[in-house]
Length: 323
Image (tube, rainbow, N blue to C red; front, side, top):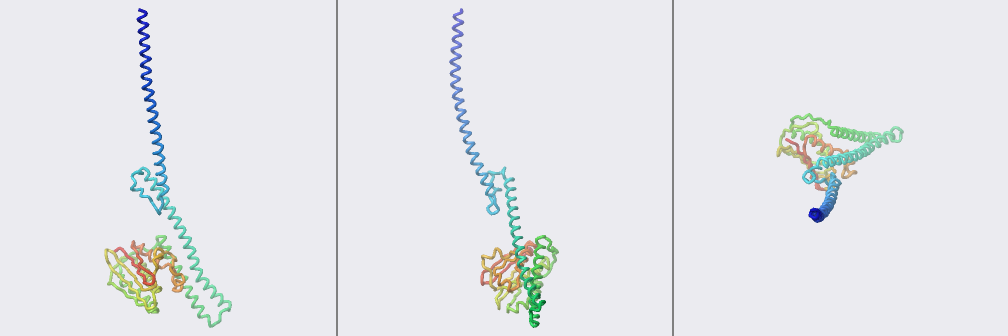
């Protein structure tokens, strides 16, 4: 009996040992497989995370106002869109602020220079007269030059004030209906003497045409455009002022047969104090602000402006206003 029990216990023990080793081998194999799979997954996660991180960082680094990534259509980064948009907006704001600051510095320098020139002339001539350095027979000539430079000074100041009104959104917004053809005719009449001095013919095309806008600003726009067409025209040249209503727009086009503007200057011609030829502009008495004011007047009326010009072939400036 004891032997039977002994052998039974021994048999169970052997069976348990054999089963343990069998299961241990299986568990060991599964454990090794689990470790292997885990390592492979970790390596894949590492490389994928590294790739995605580089791609995201590259995306963020490339957000500039000159080359903005189309983040709104990139569904892969949908979760990042609010942050990317905010970064993009901030960068745009900073670059625009820097650009505006640079323009203000340039404008201040130009204003100082433009004001200094007539003031220097006025000061020198008046000092010569006051100190007895000028001959009595020269007084009339000196007085005429002082008057000319004083008027130039006043014109520059008035133009600067006008531009500051646009910058501060204080320009007059009182719009009334009026006949643009009648207004253009009056402006041409006011500039008739100036055009005749250079034997320039000014032709008005179109018919009576009602326009709802700020009367004084449109008057100033027409005056600046036609005055410029006279200043930079050739002796014996022509000017055509064309007024048309088309495609729910009122179009004012002033075309001359003057010296023209080379294509390289087209992008900057409406900037303040920008001149294609400084020496010629000063001889004609221009302030360098006329076209900038014209562009602001067009923008003030939610219109569009277009420049068509080539050197030595004349210039056409087209202003389109919502009818």
